[in-house]
Image: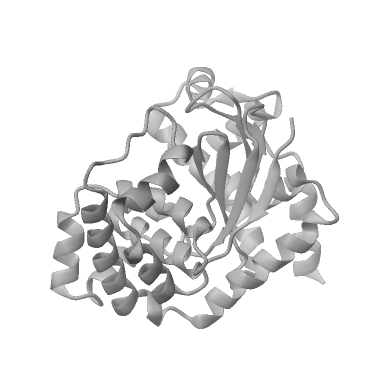
Length: 299
C-alpha cells in the first residue's frame, strides 16, 4: 500500500469550509466555534445573503470545488480564483471534474448556472464574513502547511496523516492523499473521497494551551460510557454499527460520545476499501501525549 501525499493550503478552501459549515450547521456543538456561531453570523450578514443561502437547495457544486481549487493557478487569492473559475466554459469545467468522479456521481447539465450562482453567493459571503476574519488565522494555516511540507522529507506519509488528523489509511486503492489545514472545523477532521484520492481536512492548533487541552481530555475521560467505548476500541477496530452492538446504547448516544472522543484526539479512524465504512480504534498514544501536557502544565 503506497500513496502520494500532498499539502494544500488555500484561503479559498477555508472560505468554502466556513460557508458549508454555516449552511449545513452540523457538528456545531463539538466545534471550537461553538453552537452560537451561526446566530452570530446571522447578525452580521445581510438579509439578502441570508435568504440566498437559505434558498440554495444543495452544495453539490461547492463540494466539488476542492477539485478545482487544487487545479487552479490562482488558489492563493480568493478574487483571482473566482475570476479564473468564471472564465471557464461549462465544457472546460466538465473536463476538469468528470475524470475525478466515480460512476455514482454525475455532473449536472447546468454547470454554468450552478457555477455562477455559487460564485455570486461566495463573493457575498467573503465580503460580509470571511474577509473580516482575523488575518492571523490565514497566516497560521499557511504556516502549518509549510511545516507539513517540511515533514514529508523526514516522516512517513502515514505518520504525518495520523498525527494531523487521526485518520489511518488502509485502503489499497488509494493512490493520493491531500492534507488541508483548517480553522473553522477544529478540533475535528473531515475526509472526502474522489475515486482513488482522499482530501483530508485537519485542525490547526490555534489559541490552544496546555491547561485547556488537559481540561478537555480529562472531561472526555470523565464519563463511564466513554471509558467503556475506549476499552472496547483498545481491543480492536470496530465499525459504528459494531460499537452500537457491543456497547448497547442508542445510535445517537454513541455518535455523541464518539464525537467527543474524536474531538480530543482519543480515537483513530481507519479508512478501508469498504465503501462508506469507517473503523474506529483507541489512539493508544494519547496517554503519553496527556502526560506531556500535564508535565508542561505543572512546571
